[in-house]
Length: 303
Length: 256
Ligand SMILES: Cc1cc2nc3c(=O)[nH]c(=O)nc-3n(C[C@H](O)[C@H](O)[C@H](O)COP(=O)(O)OP(=O)(O)OC[C@H]3O[C@@H](n4cnc5c(N)ncnc54)[C@H](O)[C@@H]3O)c2cc1C
Ligand SMILES: Cc1cc2nc3c(=O)[nH]c(=O)nc-3n(C[C@H](O)[C@H](O)[C@H](O)COP(=O)(O)O)c2cc1C
Ligand code: FES
Image 1 (cartoon, each protein chain N blue to C red):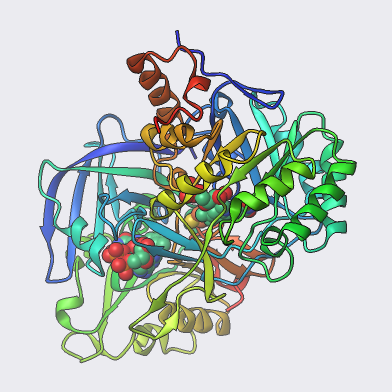
Image 2: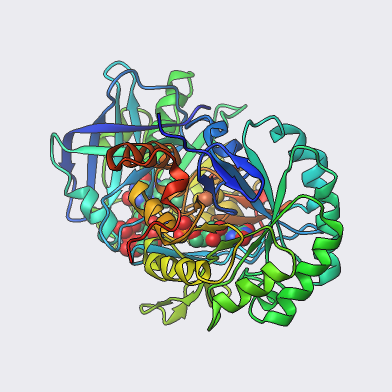
C-alpha cells in the first residue's frame, strides 16, 4: 500500500492531486464523470467581492498544445458564493479552497473575511496573478512590495491556510515566492497563466476580445516545471505546482522538481476524469519505483 | 441529463460532397437518453493543433441500433481528421451536452438551416414527427452541391430550398424564400441553426410576425460542459454559457 497523503503545512491532503481554479467550476460540473471527493483538493472558481460579468466573447483561442483564455473572473461575488453555492458543495469529502481575487487590497481583505467564516473551507488561494483583468490581479503579483502588501493585509484577517498563487509573468519568480513566504503565506501555488496573444491571419484581427490572454496547457509545462524548481530552492513552505499537467508522469515531474501537491487545469476540459487517472498513476509509479509514500517524491530529482 | 464519456466505433463514413461527411457511430452498449439540439464533444487526436475537443451537433440517433449520426463539415484540421475517420476507428465523445429545442405548443413549425447548421434539425424533425407534427424545412446553401441530406429531411416533412446561385430552389438566401416573404405566415414556431447572419434575419422576421423563434448558437468552446466559461453569449440576464444554458436560446432572450 502506497501512502498518498500529503501534509500541506498542517493541512492533510488525501493525495497530491487538486483541480485548478477556473477549470473545474465548483466541482458540480464534474459529478457525472466521477466522485470529486476522491480529489486531494478543489480550487473553486476565481471569486471577487462583487459580481463580475467577465470579458466579452470571444474569450478563448486554441493554440498549439494549449489555449489562451480571457474569461476575466466572471463570478457572482463572494456573498452569492457563501449563501448559494457553498451550502451545495460543503459536504464534499475533500479540501475546498476559494480562489480569491480583487482590484484593491481592501477588496481582497473583505472577500477573505467572508470566506474565513465558512467552516468547510480550510483555505484560500490568493490569486495575485490573473492576467485577464485590467485593475488588480496580476498587478499585485508582479512586484515584491505589492505582493507583500496584499498578503500581509489578508494574513491579518484570514486565520486558516493561506496559499498564494504566483504569476509567471515576472523576471524572478523565486524572489516573489520568498517575499510572500516572509509575509505569512502557508504555501505557494504556481503557475498561473502566461500572458499570450493570437491573431487570426484571415481577418487580421486579434482572436480574443481583450487582445491578450492567459496561456495554459502542455505548451507552458517546461516553464512551469522550471519555476517550481527555482522556487523550491528558496522557500520552506510547500509548493503546489501546475501548468500543462495532462497525466501522472507530468504530475510526478512537478513533484520531483519540488512540488508537494499539484493542480490540474486545462486537462479537465479534454478528459473530465483525468484527475482520477493521475491519482492512480502516481500510486502505480510509487509502487513500481519503491516509494512507500508519495511525499517521498517531493524534490527527489537526482541532480 | 446525465453526461458520459465513451468510445464509439465508426461503422460508416458516408461522403456527401467535397465538404461534408456523415459519420455513423456505434455506442458500446445502450445509448442513453438525449434530445434534439444537444451536442457532443469529439476528441480528435493529440496533434499540436487539435488539442481541444470539437463540438458537433447530434444529427440523428437510432435508438434501436444504438447508433448516432454526426454531420461534419470540413473547416480546419480537426474536422478534416474527423471526416477521414474510417470504419472500425474509435471516436471518443463527451455527450450529451447542452439544452435542447423546446417542443412547440402549436403545430405549424418551420425549421430553417444553413451550412452545417442543418445538422440538429434532422433529429428535431424526427422528434416532431414522432409527436404528430409534420414540420416544414427551409434549407439554404450557396450552390446545388451544398444542399445535402435532402432525402433524409423529405422523409420527415416538406422541404424548401434556396441557393445563392439559383441552381436549385429559390435564388438567394433563406430569407428570400416565399415561406418567409408572406405577410400572413402560417407558422407558429421557428427553429433555426446556421451562420449567425442567417439566424439574425430569421429571428427578425419571426419577431416582426409574432412567431416564436429558437436559435442554436455555435460559440467557440473549450470544455462543453460549463467548467471554463469561455463560450458565453450576451443575454438579457448577462453572460450565459452556450454549452449549458444553450446552445438553444429564445431569439428574444439574446442581445443581438
Ligand atoms: C454547439 C455546436 C454544434 C456544432 N455542430 C456542428 C455540426 O453538427 N457539424 C459541423 O460540421 N460543425 C459543427 N459545429 C462547428 C464545429 O465545432 C467547428 O467547425 C469545429 O470546431 C472546427 O474545428 P477545426 O479544427 O476543423 O477548425 P479550426 O478553425 O482549425 O479550429 C480552430 C479552433 O476554433 C474552434 N472553432 C472553429 N470554428 C468553430 C465553430 N464554427 N464553432 C465552434 N468552434 C469553432 C475549434 O473548435 C478550434 O478550437 C458546431 C459547433 C458548436 C459550438
Ligand atoms: C479557462 C481558464 C480559467 C481560469 N481561471 C482562473 C481563475 O479564476 N483563477 C486563477 O487563479 N487561475 C485561473 N486559471 C489558471 C489555472 O488555474 C492554471 O493556473 C493554469 O491554467 C495553468 O494550469 P493548466 O496548464 O493545467 O491549465 C484559469 C485557466 C483557464 C484555462
Ligand atoms: S465551453 Fe466551457 S463553459 Fe462552455
